[in-house]
Image 1: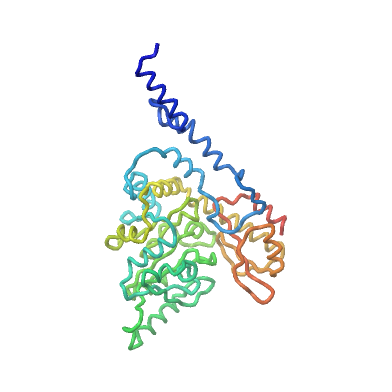
Image 2: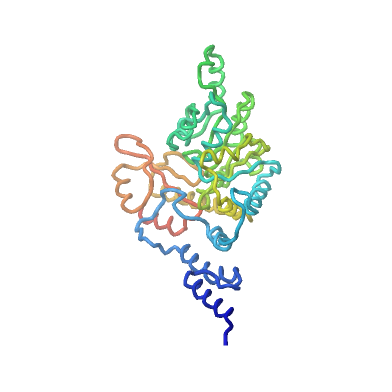
Length: 394
């Protein structure tokens, strides 16, 4: 005959079972393996909940996250950890990032997304009367809804060369600015922003980056590298910058997660331990701080374990290279020769409209009255069969 205590426990277990919770006395690890992971496997399956009949090469943030991240999020779901990035997963991720880039004294912070990261970093490093120099096609001046200007800082633009800044033009701009006797009445250039890769998928050579950095140093201006797609740039076959060399050629950069295997998040790195005073507070002020900070830390801890971040980035570049070969094989013209996961081609407007009925991609810009440039993007998750299927459509 059951004791009153056992009867009460049995009743509670029935109720917890109905709610999908672990029994009293059941090991949490056993419950996670038996109850949580099976549905997660279903969620990660390539069988869609909604039927999309078209292939997609629209962007590199249309999938969820690498299955290793999903698995670890499930396994640690009921753990209770300190908030705001003070958890052990975030600390572990910071150390792995420092080791990867060879910068033991760096300051590392995790922010929620690219626009928040760019506006927060720039606002924290500029004085009220300063602006940031970028090329005219730079992300902060074109695709961030004025987020930088919203913080009170003007984006000062230079011409671009396939998305890249030229060190000579940067120096000429600064010389002309300070040669003007009325420059005190103008927005003072306070920092330089570039992205690696650029909006066109192009990357800077080591010599080009060294030249830009040298100009910045001569004018005591920090150089900020937007690394939303950093993995794709560093893993490109055309790249000649070593992972451990990059931090020496800038004052702040970030390793993007949103576009390289994470659900969301960017890892901001001040390589010389040179984070602005109270940067944590600035992050929160800009709405870029997560209370459940371990959600970010755990993702980056996973991405920077056993080189996963770079392995999946290399895969995207390899798929993009194959995709480029297919377009060339089919007689299409390259608009900009990109060595990373974004590929740009020229086609007639009629052909683009026809393809849009079968494949998701982006119309980039007009070329002439009858032709446009289009963008096809591969990601860390692009399967080979999708690239081969595109070949049949073309």
